[in-house]
Amino acid sequence: MKEYKHFINGDYVGSQSGKTFENRCPVDNHLLGMVHEADKQDVDLAVKSAKTALKGPWGKMSQSQRTELLNKVADRINERFDEFLEAECLDTGKPHSIARHIDIPRGAANFKAFSETLANHPTESFRLDTPDGNGAVNVGHRTPKGVIAVVSPWNLPLLLMTWKVGPALACGNTVVVKPSEETPATTTLLGEVMNECGVPAGVFNVVHGFGAGSAGEFLTTHPLVDAITFTGETSTGEAIVKAAALGLRSISMECGGKNPGIVFADCDMDKAVEGTMRSAFVNCGQVCLGTERVYVERPIFDEFVKRLKEGVAKLKLGRPEDEDANFGPLVSLEHRNKVHSYYRLAIQEGATVEIGGGIPDMGEALNDGAWIEPTIWTGLPDDARVIKEEIFGPCCHIRPFDTEEEVIALANDTDYGLAATIWSENSARSIRVAEQMETGLVWINSWFLRDLRTAFGGAKQSGIGREGGVHGLEFYTELKNICIKL
Ligand code: NAD
Ligand code: 6OD
Image (cartoon, rainbow, N blue to C red; front, side, top):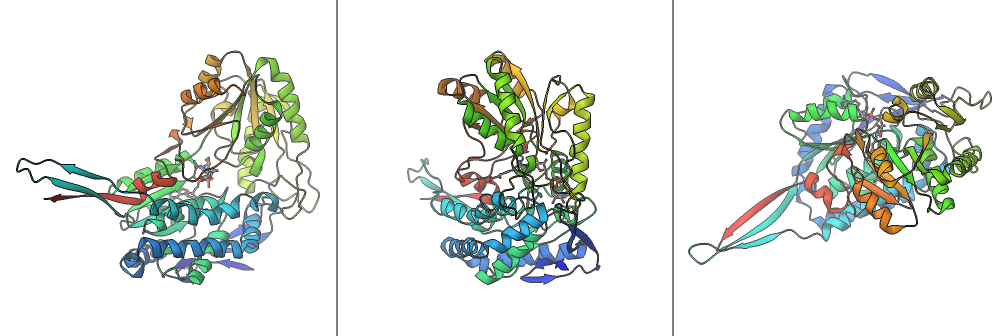
């Protein structure tokens, strides 16, 4: 049976307390292995290793030396692609066909994109006139922030963890990662890659465990952590912001969403249906950017609902290694209970279940897994909890609208502000509507089309700050102004 240890100062180590917890595969609930749970002492060791490594060879390397190492890390993930793929799909249950195109390649690319962007980004300089006529020159100078705590979720484990570790290391920081307790495997495996590539000990550390009262809390409250970057639920984000207040540590928060999709009657119907299928159902609906509220202009409402139902009926549920499968289970039985409770709530709140709504019979071999039916509802009132709360499952509600003004108000009627998607062949209108979305991200005639040079993050309760491209510099570095009197 597999054992998932912490990775501290370049070595795999067990918990000093000997405490472990189970890691189960959501496909059929079989036991994958035992994960060590870090206590305060383990976390302390990891943070101190990261602090020490800031001064060691890593701290003395030039930007180009660090870039070279991080490029090697990306290449090595690609060389060990199948191992990462297998590990990610066993932890999450997601189809190989998806992880092969999204999770693993992006997990590697995150190590290249940022070091390249940062290496080519200038710092500012200003000439100041002074009364003596000689003047002064101001030069911006960036230094690493220090030890960055990376707290990551389970839905795209490698991708979302390296999305933070990549820029953190490119900027010269060291990291302590706390991956989700549901998905320890690929983060653990990355430790091997770091060693193989010659990343100095202590630069990349991993501690396993849960949130409150466990590794997550011990890490985010540790006084030697200089900054915390988090991806996960808004309520967890709030707890972490409180932890970060102690010692005034910087934070970057990427949290939940209740994202609208707006489909205008002048859309290309094929593209809108295909895009909404992906945005609502890919990764079993467990993508923070996913569409859970779809608004369709009335003249095409019936046709759109019919086409989306046809798309859902064709989804192929199956084991990760089944190459025809494009739909896996949810990440855990616990999460399935949560999503299923929303399915029941939708009926209580007056929904018409257009398709799905239950737990599928997957046969004896898989029925212990976290399977759930992809589901479409219509007919819910705008104030239903199913419309207001993030479900994070393979489901969406479709509602008709009549005017642009009405749909803008409906789309923005949420506490969240992560992403919106607009489907229309009228560019002027799409841009006009996009500008009025209260979100950090808008896609027009596409979804989850990512350019890693661009800003990524949420408005309202979907987050604080922006990462991606040069925007991450604000969080991952300290900007110092050096004023030189001439
Ligand atoms: P979660 O908030 O339950 O857990 C995320 C991480 O935080 C885990 O590692 C967990 O152990 C840790 N954690 C939990 N409580 C903690 C505490 N008190 N202190 C420190 N750490 C703690 O989220 P999840 O269920 O793993 O992921 C799903 C959520 O993540 C959804 O809400 C989704 O929208 C959000 N998400 C957002 C983005 C984004 O970019 N905005 C991306 C992916 C997922
Ligand atoms: O593409 C990314 O960089 C990113 N952070 C995606 C987030 C997906 C949320 O589930």
